[in-house]
Length: 288
Ligand code: SAM
Image 1 (tube, rainbow, N blue to C red):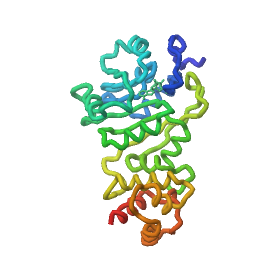
Image 2 (cartoon, rainbow, N blue to C red):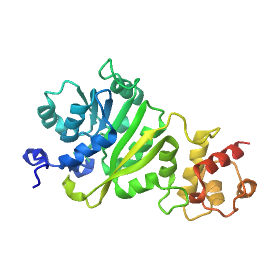
Image 3 (cartoon, rainbow, N blue to C red):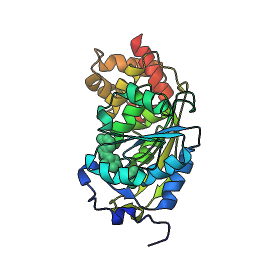
Image 4 (cartoon, protein in one colour):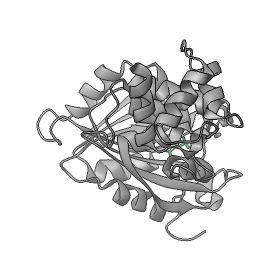
């Protein structure tokens, strides 16, 4: 075992739980790189989702002003509190991240230390459980939360989807969501051997720098994302077909085709060919 591999997971009596996506990072070099990518400094308040056995939490506590960690698995209370007992800049909340009162959680995390911190904002850092990656990322992006940046380990294929440009084979609804809210980049590829137990897939770290103002201006953001989702729900259909059947709008295929023609686009274009700016324009035109 290389010397920078943490042995704590081996010493622990905890049996990793598949149902919670528990693949613990055992390579301390990679943990340190993730914290570097997140750009965590002593001014930052951090929210970690899924601290697991606390190996990354330890690094975060060493560098951040304050860390709030949310962990679903209550059987980790004992190992986590034993390992991290000495940290006075850590708050652990046991619960499901999807069931938290987000305003309350982020207010606590941002004010976690009461004084310093980046103007009431939080850096989110996580080695995400893969069974629930998209719902967690969507929740973080959609709720207008006080977040400076999100740095997450995800499955490599999901990372590629998050940063995929319009027109590319990987683009999907998640790409538009991520790129509307942030400047996103893949910063690191991580092989299965860096985890215990090793997952079947390669992983990657995505860093999202949140925009203060989105790069495109849609009059009705919710409508724009309804259109985006509808066009990707029906991936093999044309955009006009997808929207007519999937967006829950009272609009016919011919009306959508008319708008596409007015925009200088083909009537039979597929959703993945539209840029974010074109989805914004389409939604503004549908709004009338
Ligand atoms: N951060 C640790 C590491 O890097 O070794 C553990 C990462 S492991 C991939 C994912 C962690 O998220 C596990 O500790 C798991 O119990 C936790 N988890 C899974 N679902 C969760 C949920 N809905 N809310 C909060 N934590 C969750």
